[in-house]
Amino acid sequence: MRNLFNQMNTEAKVMLDTILSKDKDSLSTEELAFVMARRQFLNDEQRKRFAEELKKHEAGKLFKTDEIDLENLEGMPMATLAKIAKQLKIKGVKDLDKDALIEAIREVKGGKEE
Image (tube, rainbow, N blue to C red; front, side):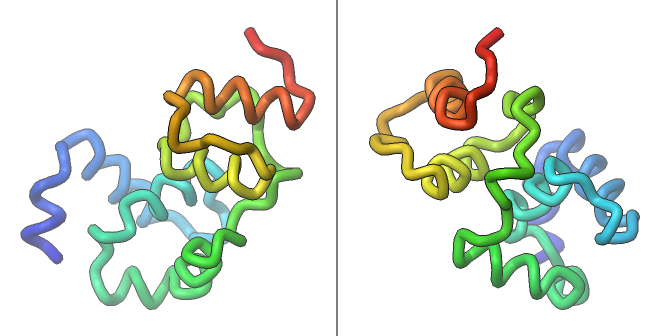
């Protein structure tokens, strides 16, 4: 895994290390989404630590759509946005770019487009 970790850009490495140094119960939705989007870079110890979250993530049940911060969708990885859209039953997710996906999520959730 360390060789794979070395393939990640420096900024992402620092961010992942910073997030992983925190107590997992104190992570924000965005931080947890960042970890889940980079789960292939986790070592065995980190995978054990996040085992429950990884299982929920793989089942599409990690992020509750009623807890989504509509103001910070732009900072979420595309994979997380796609999972949220799936939970919201938004169709055609594969055909949407990030901006269109964010707009669709906000429409369904009743958020304002800026």
